[in-house]
Length: 72
Image 1 (cartoon, helix red, strand yellow):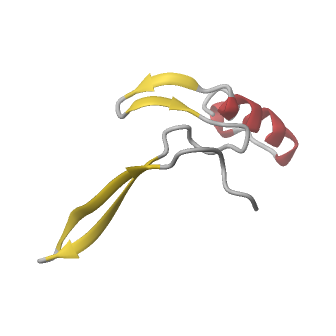
Image 2: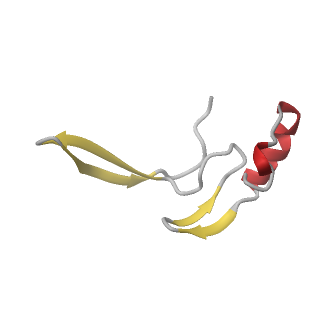
Image 3: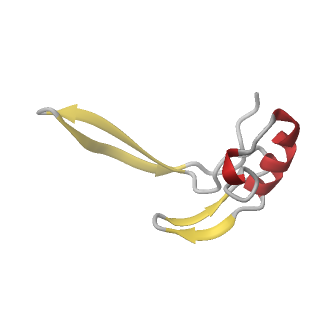
């Protein structure tokens, strides 16, 4: 994204260029592997559900979405 929107220069006419750049993302980041599918969704399908207990967020369950993106 930084390559496409360098210096804050972004107009709607560059939207597809930004989408293409995000979809090419494939790197190791601080939280692990980062890449996106053809829908623009992250390929890391891990989700954690939290609940507030005693004023703190506490993880309740962590799971992985298997398969592709849901139908719209």
